[in-house]
Amino acid sequence: MRTLVTLAAAAAISLAAPAPAGAVKLGIVAFQMSAETHARTANAAKAVAEDKGWEVTLLNSAGSVPDHAAQIENLVQKGVDAILLAMGKPLQAEAQLKAAAAKKIPVVTVMSGTSPHTLFDVTVNEFEVGAKIGVYLLGLLNYQGNILMSRYEGHGGTKIRGRVMDIILEENTGVKVLGTHAMARTQSWREDVKAGMEALILRHAGQFQAIWASFDGQAFVIDDILQAQGYKKGQVFLTGVDGGQEAFRRIRDPNSLFTATVAIPFELMGEAAVDSLDDILSGTPKSEITPGPYLFMDAVLVDANNVPAEGEWPW
Amino acid sequence: MNEILGRYGTVLAALALFTLLALLAPNFTAPMNLLNVVKQASYLAILAIGFTLALLAGELDLSVGQVATLASVVCAALVFAGQPWPLAALAGFLASLVCGVVNGVAVTRFKIPSLIATLAVGVIATGIAFLITGGIAYVGRFPAGFVALGRGTLGPVPLPVVWLVLLLAAAWFLVERTRTGAALSATGEAPEAARLAGIDIARIKLLGLVLSAGCAGLCGLVLTAALASSSPTIANEFLMRGIAAVLLGMTTIEPGRPNLAGTLLGTLVIAGLGNGLTLLGFPYYVQDIALGLIMLVSVGFSARFLTEAAFGGAR
Image (cartoon, rainbow over all chains, first blue to last red; front, top):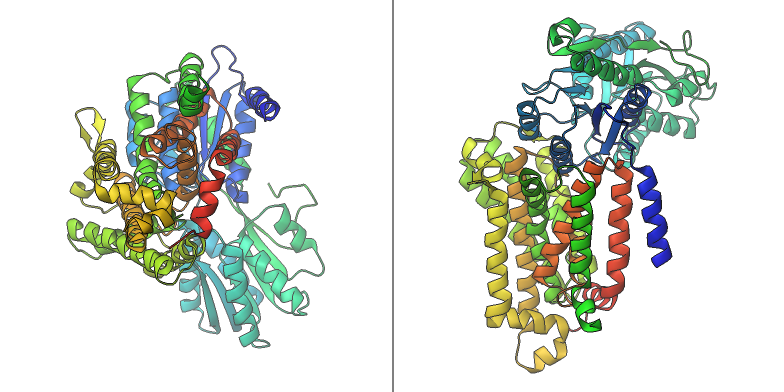
């Protein structure tokens, strides 16, 4: 046991980030590193900050709001020079962000929403994202047919995409929604989506021509269900949102029914957040970086026509 | 010497750890940081005190995280429905007590091992939390009076610490100065002997589980106030850390036996370690590994007691 503890301590000490003298100390808090989008953002931010010679403390709230608040609090106590929240919860951590603002620690967030105590949120316009994929899907159907929907109302972005799709459907009455599954659980969401969508797909077999999913992870689960039930590419259109190498692989895969996604540039957003903090720390006024509470980035619609090769990105 | 080391070894190890952090981690000993550590420990400690009381009565309560969440969600739902916050908080607390009664009846009347019964009640509590919320978080819009319960201070001392001190004093009085407290300990340590001594061990075990659920409910309410938010998973992760704190506490003061002072020390070590590792710049996964190691070492000291609590001795 003594050897085990000694080895663990040695490994831990070797993982502590060495602090170059005078290096900028950046704290990054990702809300849920097990979510690919959060990890992509946080890891890209960490990489670009370390390239600048900064000392980075990367924390994972593991989906826990109490941990999220405590970690921001600990970074403020550490006396970091700047904080970056990846998919953070500024409303819930208001007291902690207020403490950061009081200590004049600049905080930039990525896809987290706004707060009076943060500088701005690097994000994509979710209304635009929802409109892109919604109009695209109805276009594929030539504005006639039946669809199934897989929604998630517990996240701001996915909720907006669903609302935008509702408006598109209201305006285009040739497309009917035969059934909707609203994902509720976050910790066992794959099982939740699988159970709900499997039931809908079986119930409406042969009656629907497309499935709209609020994010790619849901679409992947649905794609697997469709393939297992013998559906072939082109028989049903399936769309999601987020982008990423797995999404692109499925779009290229001749057996997959996954048709298109809107690729959100998570890595670029993480990098932009760090670059912005660099500018702020160098004295650039916030208004010169972005005029309002958001720094908008472009999301790219990707289908078979523009899908990048393996390991490549569409930007 | 061996007896002193056996009894206070963990206390000495904790002192050594805190001394090391004081020497190495910048700002660790700053008064504001130490207050933050105690505040961060207080949420977990409130829950862990209840867990300790159930364990003293010889029962393991694995529903505490979900019961805390249920209390939080019930309170938040009523606040958002326009009810006065004292009424909402009372309803949340009562919901936690109901869970405790169901745990107690399942264990004492239906002879279901507490490991199984409390797991099942925890799953039910999660189901009810999702039923109430639909998976969506309640954020903001909490009355200032309620939020002050979690964010306010008494002088420099955060109010969650004040609630912890009051609860700890009440629990200490119950365990050390009342016949019921003596019955709790006797029931957990030697149920047959307790029965022969005329103690109604079923009633005492039920009381232990109700107290555990009540403390979990208080934890959920204080968390809700501190974060001005609630969600169907807000306190779920507290179970593992609560167990870790109590197990660590069982290695000291009264080794092999659940005890309040040990539990408090355990929560302080967990919070202090998380804070210290962040101040030192360790990445997030080192904190997970450190917590796992604490549990691994601690469980060796308390394995016999835990096995009996989980699978039941006399009821």
